[in-house]
Every structure is written in structure tokens, then in C-alpha cells.
Image 1 (cartoon, rainbow, N blue to C red):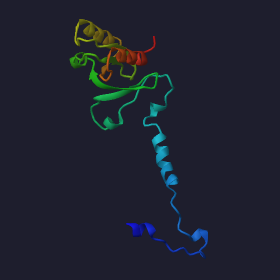
Image 2 (cartoon, rainbow, N blue to C red):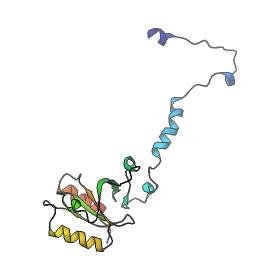
Image 3 (cartoon, one colour):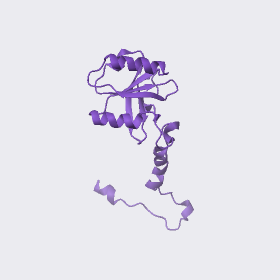
Image 4 (cartoon, rainbow, N blue to C red):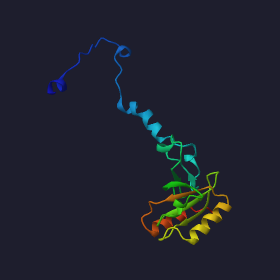
Length: 161
């Protein structure tokens, strides 16, 4: 290995610079990759700051069934959620979750904390009310650690009145 490190390549000093082999500049080679990383992953990723928007997960984009999605809150924070049909009872069975009622045009109709008990009469009434208001899906965000985290997520994602 040491012999390779000390190896010298013959240099022809009489050769003109345009005929010399091109040296690869690592920084120049990485520029296209850097520009590619900086480009938004989704068309709506360049939305206005302070605007709540859905940003589908790229890893699940090829799946026939949409089981997961992500929302970008007004603060810019990203919230990953499971997707359920509006009449699917499983959506209301989670405790300590943020529930988002979503219309077919991908807008949040209403949002609430599921509370510590999961399915109860109040959640069922809420689901019926948001269905009448035009919601077709319930997105469930389970990653908020405590009630303060759920409250912060609700404030960040809640539709403006």
C-alpha cells in the first residue's frame, strides 16, 4: 500500500494543457448531487410558509393503498400520520393521538385530541359531524409524546376559522 502512495506518474512537460488529462475536482463532481438534494421532493413542498399542507411520503408513493401520509404544519414541522376511511372504527380506537378529519380535496376539516380513553360517544359524534362537513378520511398522528405535544401539533395543524 505504501508503494502505491509513493507512486509517481510520468509528466510530459512538453504537452500542451489542452491535451493533458482532465483532473477531476471532487467539489465540481458533487455539485449536481447537491442541487438534486436541494430540489423539493413534491410539487407542493415549495408552498407558502405558514401554510398547512399534506406531503405524501415518498417511500409509500408506489403502493396502491395509501396507509401513511405526512402533514407540514404552519411552523414547518412535519407530522406523519396513518390514514383511515371515515367510517373505519379503528381510527377512533387510539389513545393519546391527534385526529385529523381530511376532505377529498386534501384539506383538514377539523382536528382533535383522541383523549386517554379511545372510542367513546364524543369521538363517535365528532366523526359523524366531520363526515357531514365533508371529511372522507381520518389521519391519526401517534408520535406526539404527551398531551403538551398533542396540543402543540393541534395548534400547528388546526384549520384557521
